[in-house]
Image (tube, rainbow, N blue to C red; front, side, top):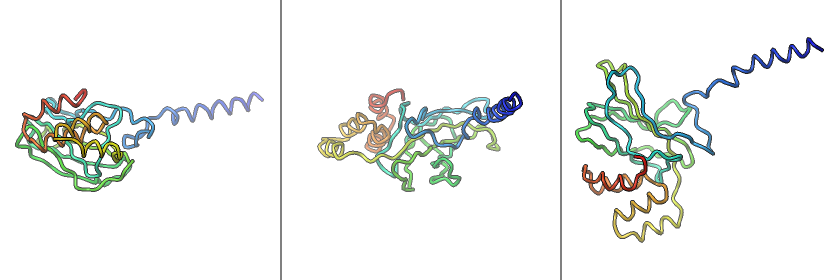
Length: 200
């Protein structure tokens, strides 16, 4: 009996590391709770470039269209790479380099995305000549078609700011951002964006 119990104890010890090991970095978050959907970081950079994805720090970032647009802020950054991937899929669905001439750039994705799937937008800026050191920003999001009620509200809106507010009030912050910036692609549109976007 003692030998049997000892065997069970050893088996338990062997499976503990597997139970405690973290999910791989490309594993999709649980559907019921996406968790942190926005972040920044560096790898090897002495001075981190000043750039970010303009988006709220909320539990779930959703988009209404299968070709979403993202507003990128970059100051003192010569170039950055934007990718959209579906976790556990190696090939990016969108992959472009940008050499920004303005502080803000509206990135328009051209590959249709599937509804109810989680995707990751990543912006990477090199901070060394050989591109070995990088700074990055990421955003997890999913495509969620607007309801009929929301579409009716949007059709009754009198102007772009009203449409943007309706989108933001319903949690479609990226649509609100892209609407405002498309209408006025200047820094002067940012104060209005900031009034609609929490914790931007």
